[in-house]
Length: 260
Image 1 (spheres, rainbow, N blue to C red):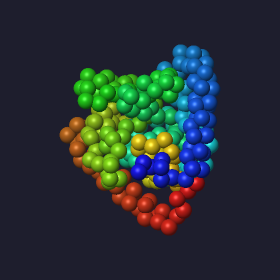
Image 2: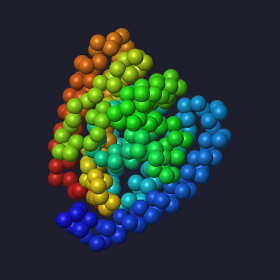
Image 3: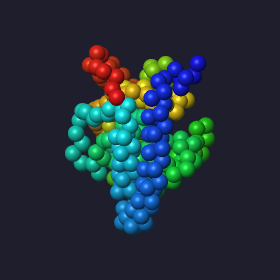
């Protein structure tokens, strides 16, 4: 039996209404972003303003979903224009919506398929997000150059070093690229931990799930003085920290309501 067949009719109806509302919000927002793009990009080459407004669309959409309860915790970032290579674990598509609640702009490294979605893909392009085609070395090189470009324009970049979601919920091995990038550009790595989003947007389903989710900002890890030889150790150190904090957060949440 499909998941849709096992959920209450009311949940399916509410999900359909949320999807319709999401479409309306997106159509209004793409026009607003286009106006912002025209008037701000000549003076804002990092597309910080357009990007911030794009993330606000995700906040609005998540706020109208009655099944989702999102919160932000952890380290406060005092200077939103200090560039970081931001890395996090990956639970679901809802990570993007929860991450948009963070009070600074960062460009997401995202698979090419997302840029081909009408309206959303257009907004991602205007916001300066970075596309990559999986399995294409040339595309990976171009994406890394785009990441360097954003960092040099004092805008953080967001990379999910697992590369994909785990089918079992376990933390996958981290790829090294994000950490090599941080060392080459001599910018800090900023770890995030997502917990609870796996139930928000189940893979392969159009019905939203109930989720009480949280993103926690951890302490930045400086890369000053590191060389590329230090990248594997940096990767492992950050992954171990994310794994430990994720386990602690899950333990803290035991007994809490599922949300909604």
